[in-house]
Length: 394
Image (cartoon, rainbow, N blue to C red; front, side, top):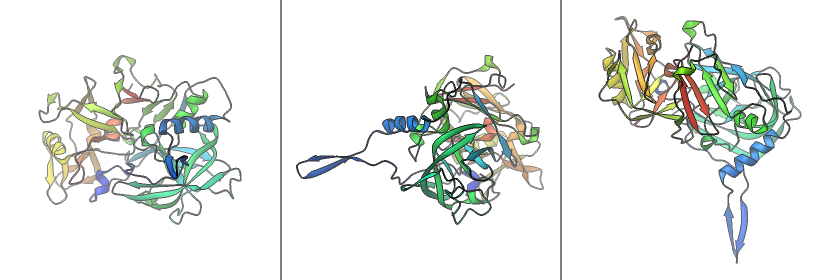
């Protein structure tokens, strides 16, 4: 999401759903005397059946990775890729999000659609809409998105996926309406699937269209021309990273997100004693690194920061050449000093807003490692093993 200079959306990922009201699966019934007991099938069984249904009509081919270009928006605020849906006109610009697990686009009749592209059975007659399959996802601190489920052919990277299920948003009460995206393509873990639908990587791997349900992320940097960004589905792209630096698989501390342990932080190689044994979410839809205010204070102090007492925002020298690194899997992952500042918010004293900030007043959760961190590593996410690996970029 966009970084605001003076509002809390700066500090929170727009795409961190906290709850959902869903009617996607009918419950089974059994009777005991005059009492009727309703039981729901396990989520894992539901997902397995949905994957099989979603995959049933994909044309078989020799499995190979699917490479999808990623486009940075603004100063690496977020990253997008284009998809097509059925015969709906044009393409859909999708926000690529590892912090959520669902896919949704605007319905053509959505009152908040504005100039965004939308879907409708009138423009894609083969689309199937299920009005009874309703979903509603509140996003922490940023409003709510709701709608019904639909199925149509989704084309990603030139590959058609017939009958793929997605959310058709009829209400978008969220600041995302002001962003240049037509929907969200989520790549979180199955535990975070609020719509109880498998994501595209799982579907393609289950059918054998790609080798495995693996994601490889290369986030581009606008300051470097915004070129070279890529999502590799099926296998890592070894041309993008140095294999000698690849970490051993890191078990995902799974709560619906991709989470890694952070065991320390350093500035110019000197440890910050107060930082250790934290947990962090890898989130492509967050631009900053967000953490509890106290942790942000510890780190920014070592970067020579000033704090605005009225906003609790940290500012560091715009021309800083200090190098912050985070320790993950016994390796120090350096962050380019250019990624530590937001040059759009420059104060007369030569200070710019830091890209490491505290969350809301009561925020005590896992860190969010957004693009500020992820631009500096190749990130591999494996659904089959529920593991993560990092490597240094070429």
